[in-house]
Image (cartoon, rainbow, N blue to C red; front, side, top):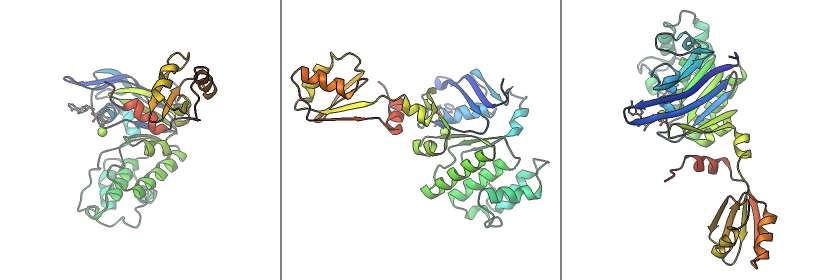
Length: 302
Ligand SMILES: Nc1ncnc2c1ncn2[C@@H]1O[C@H](COP(=O)(O)OP(=O)(O)O)[C@@H](O)[C@H]1O
Ligand SMILES: [Mg+2]
């Protein structure tokens, strides 16, 4: 396997009794990218991450980190991974620096300078000697990131790291992740918030009910979206009926005073309608944004 693949999952599956938390997750994360793992609550993100980190045993499929399979008791590759899953385990009455010193004891190679370095990376140098219990949610998460970065991991796995943070704090984390990626750290970032992932990730996998339903760069995902033609007509239901016979039209939806058609050009729609005696008073085309794609991919389908 190419050394450029930092993380690979193949047909990963996890069932808890009758609960099918993860059904089919196959993805590849390349060195140096920020990879977004996007899905609504309950779609299986944390369960997948548990398997990636060797904390949960898959019901099916496999995980490879740096080309080595992750199996219980054989997880040397995990030494090259840093993780922040949920809120970090901080000792509240210790300072940020003391919390890091505590973690450093587990890693023989971590120097005193490295502690100062990670404090600077996450922007906590000034607050280094304050007790963690007084920290805001954002500061606690940044301290958690510092802990995850302490042993200079090549891959950083973050499960919804900005949960409970305000927009300014979220922006700081995004900037931080981009600068880590520029320094060569690969980032795997889960989120249920589209805009968070969209702004920071090179590539995105969209998860729904335990399955990857879309995978690619934000640009690629949008490119696969079909243009929608919107025409204003006096009788949308009549126009919609007429459009049923238009070859290539993949979706026809009356919407208020309009009909929306996908799969064909605006010109073809207008021609087809006028030849049937329906003259649109307005025509426009639009490409749905990522938000609507995400909703379409992840909404309940009865
Ligand atoms: N230990 C468990 N036992 C039973 N069901 C679980 C367990 N962990 C997660 N689940 C269920 O699996 C599904 C996916 O959960 P999770 O991976 O936490 O999703 P996400 O992180 O995307 O919100 C949910 O329906 C959740 O209730
Ligand atoms: Mg979760």
